[in-house]
Amino acid sequence: MKLSERLKVVTDGISKWYEGKVLPRAIDVVCGSAAFGRLRRDLTKDLSGTVLEVGFGSGTNAAFITEAVTTYLAVEPSIEALRLGANKRNLPSKVLLVAGDGVALPIASRSVDYIIFSFVLCSVETPVAMVAECHRVLKTGGRLAFIEHGRSNSKGMAKVQVALDPIERVVAGNCRLSRRPYDYVGEDLWLCEDSGESYLGASSPWSFIYRARYQKR
Image (cartoon, rainbow, N blue to C red; front, side, top):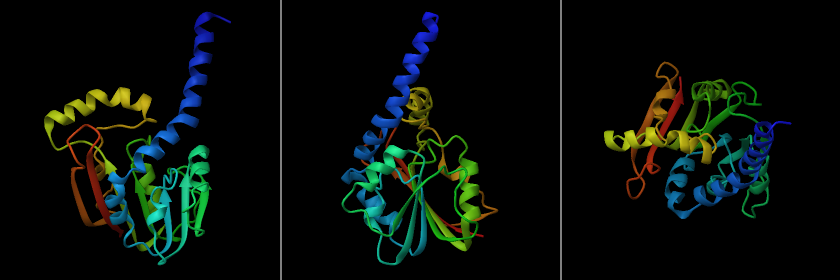
């Protein structure tokens, strides 16, 4: 085997280990911090019936769900993240862990009352396809809500985010800092009920937050 081929085997192995073991734990710590608590409470405040979370991660939103939720379908592609979530003491029994991808949800069409996701659209390769899947599985009149980070409304900061994107994709699981989450939710299929964006704390490439709530047309 050539030296270049050996190096590729080694780097591929390190990358797989990092993305499979290290990154889910890092995301669990960062996204589970108290700084996001207010956002997560707001995201989950109106949930009821059958709820689907796309990109469940390690379950940082599940701690906020109320008795109005009868079933909570938690879809997540990372087995390590699901394992971390399953081991949390405060995970409600109504949470059903499902290994799956947001762009091909293993959920029946028109079977869900509410869908949420948080800090997911930044890393999905085809965000339009993921939002289309959400539309498919929601009942008519069902709701979609999210919190995401993304492109700042400051031109200077947005340029910094674009410049950082290649590094961010490598170290943060394909994450992009420069995406605008609203761009992936078409007005022909969704009615926007509430939205807003602002920095969470001090301004930085990582702290510009989008929130929105939609109804399926």
